[in-house]
Image (cartoon, rainbow over all chains, first blue to last red; front, side, top):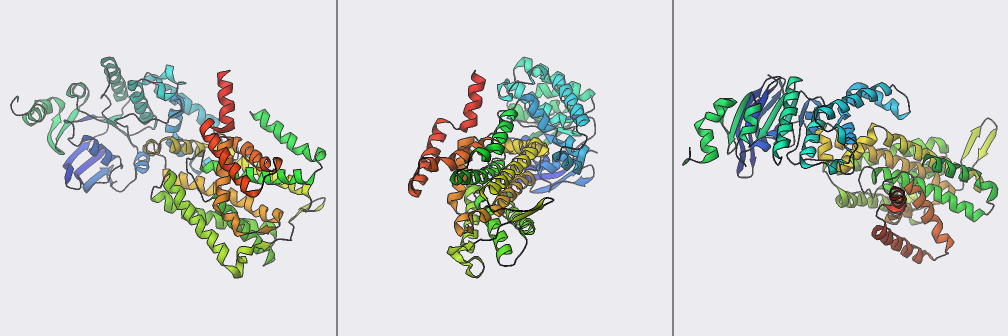
Length: 257
Length: 312
């Protein structure tokens, strides 16, 4: 198992945001986590990414407990998260964003050999070529190639979110955590996102997507988990979860269920 | 841009043949040292986004250490420099670790680094047996450089002119190398959005500390030479006044450029001498220029130049 979450709990003072959540993710699958607003989806993702520290429970990544790691260490382990509200580097172009996101590549490829580049030595020409090819491919895949020299702030909201996915992907993550990638997007943008994520799946990327839009996840996810008030109320194939009584009740209330 | 910088350097290299006035030469020498301080400060401030008030302390501590090692212990000047720099790096790592571990940013970072800087200033002021207190230490020794063509003693104005110009070039090239490398990219990421940088695998703490240590060490390098040119070291070297002067130079020149602080430093060093003001008015002028720059051209002279160029 690639990622194994065991009895994860997070309390903020008297509020239990995530309560005793357990689930696992296998390599190559797309996992959906859904639930209404305030059900603990984003908190769960932030716990996995090391942005928040769990109150109790374990996050096991490839057999090792990673509870104590900082966000950049988690990213170095191959677990990358995107943000619900697009996060950008103001002033920089789309391509420059992507170049910064290649940080881990440069680190892996050169290691301490990076110090040589300070003296103007070391074979970086090939690496730069590989990286710019990789960046172009990823921008092409995410339908951002024609905007590569635009300032990222000038992109549409959907474009900014897509840039977040592209930056996450160019890190070559083993697992990409997507925080509500579809929220705030128009119909066309969702269709586009859907196509991009399907492309990623064919490239063998493992995805964990959270969203409160059931329809979007229903088309995409192999397996799903439903959260309500911080606890898992259903898990299984996406169709099973969507048919689950507790899930329907959580979304629509008892009266309409 | 590159051509303009090289042209400026060429003019600076041949200037002593035409400029015979000692006072003009002295202004240039102080200007070069101020510019070196401003360029190294901007690595921490403009390029990494950390408003350090520790720069004057790094400069002053190094000036004291080198002076004391040479005058009291008879060390060789060139041997004393690495020792002073090592101490400055250790101090900056301690101060930086404390500040960055507690995630101090902007004014909180400025206030805490200022506090550390004041502690060091008070030590130099009160540790009479070593630092001679408020009187400072007079330096009569002149550093010498052994060349294949004989010993070159830094005593004349012209020799100091070239030494300090070389110092500026060294500091400039080091900063340029660092900023042009992957380190510069990480620093930009941290300055613009450290949370995003961190989720992309950038060790924010390490790179903040690295830029703080490199910038402080370069300030120490300037300090090592300064006392020997000025002929004395005193606790005032570590004062907030110097720290703010450097901020003013960088803001005037432009915080988003490497060459901007050089222009700002040369202008602010030369300006008071040109209009011959008393010390009090000089400080008032600094204040006025700071206010003017922030109001009229927040990106400084270089910012103004590049926006003109884009508009044209």
